Image 1 (cartoon, helix red, strand yellow):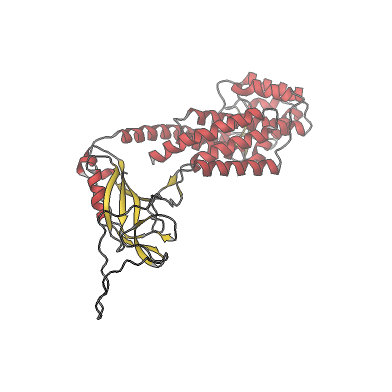
Image 2 (spheres, helix red, strand yellow):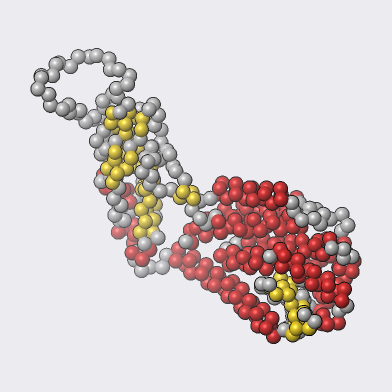
Length: 423
């Protein structure tokens, strides 16, 4: 689990950096478009944790796994990483849950006045779930100011901003150690506010009076706005919002369907390019790395079936091209069908490597003969600590349906990998 999270965080950095570059290039475009770019990048982070099965045509990979509980009871670095991640995840999620509980309590205690929920516990209009809550001092507002605040919060509800920002907080909890993840979540909130500002201005609200109302709310703020609610005003981004509101040349339209489709298409393409491909033993893809045809130093003699008539003396006659040459080791191509695995017992994890919490990969060169038996096993990339010997012993026990050429079984040279993992 921890390896998937770290891998997704590393590859997700590409998504977040590209999202930042795209939004910078589109800083004069609609805020709704930038918001959707950040949302796509954040949603892509957990998707990068899903292994994607991809056939490996040129190699056999066999992954051997052993549970971490079978290892000696010694805390490894992986255990410490997992424990640290769990503590961070728990704290961030606890902050989110406590915030939701506080919002629920505050909403239940709010007073209903003229169909509006008013609470003295907050200093800014906000929305969460499907509720809109105004601060108590909104009683002093004119009907026009109340209508503007309600239009702002209803725009958040229509955009499902509380749901998307809550999902972003959960993703941030998973990747709490990644600083770009916190930055992306903050940008998502900021672009959502600017997108809603654009919606309010599109409805005919005067920009100057709207900016003045936001500044008035900011002056009444004490402390920070609830982190789990979608607040109308946060001091940290107010300056940028006011500049955008007063910028007459700013694009304030909603993103079109073509832009949305393009964002999804680019996101899917990036996910496929960055996805952690899961390598497993493939029964139908035992093809090795393509090697030159190498004559076998000690070819096994061919045993012809018994016949009642005596065999004539061998005569040096050229063989037809369609008949495989005995004793020759074939590789990919030339009408050769690779062998397929029919029996593949797991190797024994060496005690020495298990005690040292060692994980590694052993690569071997193997010739699968005409009978489907592995021969000429040689380590081409070893690891030591007993893993090489365990890999050789395991491959000795493998059985294959032999490779075929023109309907005849032939010897075949394969490159195999045995991966030892502590899980």
